[in-house]
Length: 214
Image 1 (cartoon, rainbow, N blue to C red):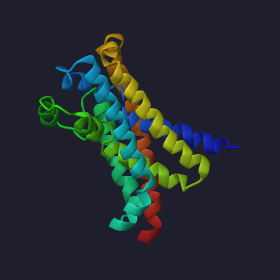
Image 2 (image 1 turned 90 degrees about the vertical axis):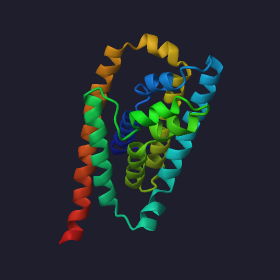
Image 3 (image 1 turned 90 degrees about the horizontal axis):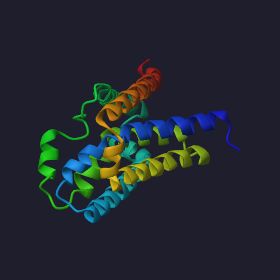
C-alpha cells in the first residue's frame, strides 16, 4: 500500500504535468490552427496530437536517465534548467499571455497554412514542449523506478494527454463553455502553482549540486 509520501508525490506529479502541458490554454491555439478544417478532421488531428504527445513524454520519462548519461548532465543541473524554464512559462501564464517557450507567433502562423498540424506544432512543442519534457524527466528521476511513483508519473502523462485530447476533440464546444475571462483566471491560478513547482525544482537542483562544489 502506498504511504502518504507516495500519494503526495503522485498528486504533485499530476499537478505539475497537467499545469505545464496546460490543455485548456491549447484550445484557442488548436482552433486557430485548424480553422479551415471540418469537424471530422479536427477530431483526427486532436487524436493524433494527443497520442504523439503521450508517446513523446513517455519516451523522455523512461529514457531520461540514459539521456543524462549520454550528454554528461547531472540531475541537479537539469533540475535548475528545467525549473528556470518552468518559471518563465509560469510568469507568462500568470500574465495570461502565450509563452514563447512553447512556440512563437511566427511558428503558429506558419502552421495555420499546413495540411497536417497534429505532430508539429500541436504535439510538439504545444503539448510536449521543453517544459513538459523537463518536468516528466525530473519527476521520473525522483521516482527512482519505485513501482508506485513510476506508475504515478506515467499515469500523470496519460491522464493529461487524455484530457488534452478531450478538450481538442470538442474544441468548439469547449470554447463556448470557457469564456476568455474564465480561461485567463484559470491560467493565472495554474501559473502560480507552476511557479511554486519551478522554484522547488531550482532549490532541489541547488541542493543536489552543493556537495559537488565543495
